[in-house]
Image (cartoon, rainbow, N blue to C red):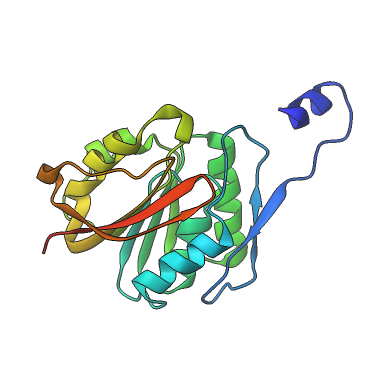
Length: 196
């Protein structure tokens, strides 16, 4: 908000923050983080934990980053060799920024789509992804709706990663079992696995 006020007043625009990719072929590359309310990139320590759980090599994996934001999670997956990574972001300005980063890194295995995540997942083909990354805006309480939309899109044995303000217990009918979990400050993060 401060950046918009300064721009409107003709003052200097606030510099964007950055997040670094921590592993894979683009290790240490920076991604811009826009100054937008509610945008909180997944911290380095949490991303490192997640990819230690999953393994460092995602060769052959198809990945969906459903609430992409800064793109930190999706770019990490692409950097670690995922065959296909789709980033969904409904904010057009953020989607343009993600595409700029994709072009700069020459990330041929990564695609960005400006779309509402829940709507997109609701009309997607089933069993399409080995990994779905969910980090919805905390203030909108989309955790269970996002899990419900994501579960059918997972291939058997596939994983859903979820960041939330609290531990979310998936309803049994989704066929998702708790695999790993952790906490970093006020953020709870979970890795759930679809029954094979």
